[in-house]
Amino acid sequence: SRDFVVLIPRVLIGVIGSGYIAAVMPQDLITGWIGPNSGLLGITIAAFCGAATPGGAVVGFAVGAAALKGGAGAPQVIAYTTAWSLYTIQRLINWEIHMMAARVVWLRAAISIPLPFLAGIAAMLIGKP
Image (cartoon, rainbow, N blue to C red; front, side, top):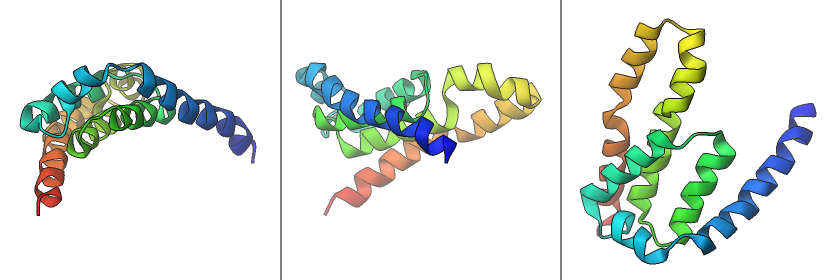
């Protein structure tokens, strides 16, 4: 119950903040780089951005929602959130390496590298009639 009280304000700020982020993001830039027609290049850009995005779920999902509202394609946002959840660089260095052996962390991250790309490609294939 204490976690609920702590998390609710963060979630509310993230949801409201994603709306503001979507309003501020340049829509031409988003649709050009990670829009629905950006294809594999957009998935690659989104995956790299996901790996570079620091922060917890409130930040990662808020940025993904803002990008989706701003004109990003669903496959690209799926690649972004998958990369963010699997191998955020900041989380690997600051948390995981301190809890597990570095070799195990880097092996897990290396094995996870193709997954955001596969998820984005699968979303592209499923989304086409």
